[in-house]
Image (tube, rainbow, N blue to C red):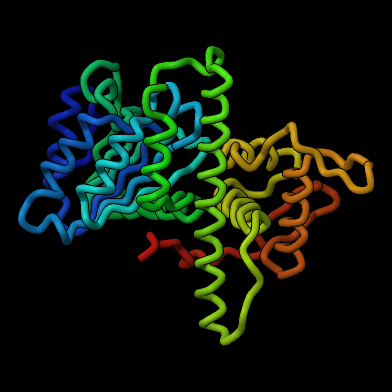
Length: 310
């Protein structure tokens, strides 16, 4: 199957893509459902070489998606539990749907990894086999994973417990207890992100032979600012704010203000974005043009392409 438009028979198309994978399968989909996960598990993870096939899945595990059933937390946990080489990542604001097998074939589509995406909705997409296009899709997925939050088995278990029995509830009808669950989900995602950053800091410390300070939210905002400037070009602070908030809604709470000695200094997360910008500027990674008021990447070599984390 060469490059072509796909507009139907989605289950068969996905199964064909599954069969292409011998070393790695990448899923980028905001919504995840049980039926496709079971199909993937049966096609990849249970065959003879299943233990060698790496599955990487980026999904939007925000509280509203978990509580209204758009993301089946049990299905995500099933994927992580039944595929020995599965890695799960959370990214707020995710809307793209991209699926890649071994950098040999890719599917860029409107179809989520759900029963509705496979069998009910009217979807369209493009099947890619041309090497350069597949490589570009893979590099894009790599960049998306880089700013995502890795979720461990315990994180997924807690998300299942919190969202269990609450699926299909609309956010406006959530009870006080359900709203508390939503807040707990956000806290899990925040702590998972900070834990991953701390692991990165420890790795850096060992490489540099020194002890580094604990990871904090500033590193999250710094990596996100850099990613957005790399992928979307020069942006003003006002243009950056909604993009950052969409990616990390759990960190960008508009109700939390920065208060010093009783004086309010605006939204706390925007202050942290400003700190991240100054850090990136001070370290020579980004620049600021006072005439256009735009931030830009200092330099981005053409051959400096991200790869999926090993």
